[in-house]
Image 1 (tube, rainbow over the protein chains, first blue to last red):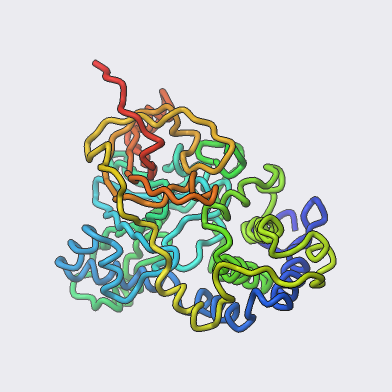
Image 2 (cartoon, rainbow over the protein chains, first blue to last red; image 1 turned 60 degrees about the vertical axis):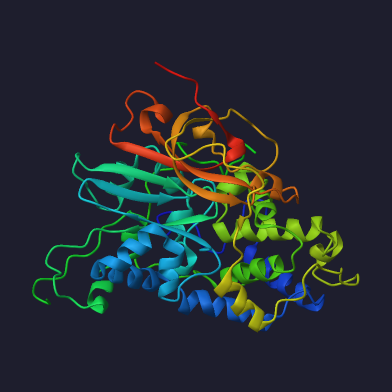
Amino acid sequence: MANCACPSEHARVAMDGYDPAARVKALEQLLVEKGYVDPAALDVIVETYAHEVGPMNGAKVVAKAWSDPDFRARLLADGTAGAAELGFGGRGGEHIVVVENTPRLHNLIVCTLCSCYPWPLLGLPPVWYKSPPYRSRAVIEPRAVLRDFGVTLPETTAIRVWDSTAETRYLVLPLRPEGTQGLSEERLASLVTRESMIGTGLALVPARAAA
Amino acid sequence: MNGAQDLGGAMGFGPVRAEKNEPVFHASWEKRALALTLAAGALGEWSIDEGRYARESLHPALYLNASYYEIWLRALERLLREKALLGEKELENGRASTPAAKTRRPKLTPDNARRLMAKGTPYQREPSAPARFAVGSSVRAKVMNPQGHTRLPRYARGKEGVVERVHGAHVFPDASALGQNEPVWLYTVAFMARELWGEGADPTLTVSIEAFEPYLEPASSKS
């Protein structure tokens, strides 16, 4: 699979013979047998992050901020309280900060030291966010990183990179695309991609035909 | 520690490859690795910072070669061993051979798992001293190379920046990784790219870190 484009998240035996799939199975059995872990609690954790928490949460927050200037102001002043108004918060998002893109300033979020990410709003981070290429390059050549994502910003747009080195977790409020006047919050939320809330993408422009 | 985790500014890793329509998990073992890490962490035997230190203490060649869940899993095994929740033999052959250790918090139930995810564990604390810096303060990140855990990335050490936000007092990771509880002030400090990367840096780029007060000193006065 040398040409596989997927980042190296596949189960595979490591160079020292470590087989994560086999190890995790043995470890779960052992921890259950010792009474440290309840498998039903593990199921709840998996279900939550597989289905209930994800970028659709952040998209709702962004769509509301685009639609409601008072909410937008509250959200930018206190991201944790703003997200909580929509019922979002909790683990991995105890201290949320929302930063706003403007035509003159583009924000980009990274965690160079590990994988810090606003879980309640975006769910678990994608593999690329945790990968050495992104973590190494975002702080030194963000424009090149953006090009990897097919995004070219005008030279006149300044770039601000936020390295999440504490428990404060960042979310980008992307620019609202042109031609979206009068759209419902639900329609607006469908334009908000995960990448646009990290800063490696822009919000989608509604297809003219479909609008 | 100056481990493989401190990646900001490193070179040679190639382009960022985003997977189209990436699933939340790529294999069922990843689901269990995530859930076991959270459930074992909930026993209260180690802090998030001890967990991070266990991950960054992996050999750099292993760290850079492993998937992220493999890093988590290897660190979890190490923590369980270090905190004596599991014995070496048990980890080796997968069979319980000693009684369970008493843990600070009870086994996570499904209801408590829901609560844990919904509420999280806030890291802000009552400050024990007034903040040394304010928004607008010119500061320098200290040159330091601790053996233990730190959240001051190498690329910012010795660099001058400006305090942009004051986040209140938070748990100090460097101390928390040693099992100590010592809240300190937390700031967002912004650096011009030229200060970090020298000539040729993107003139439109500013990079900020979240800096705990012990990482900072007043900037030397410059004309």
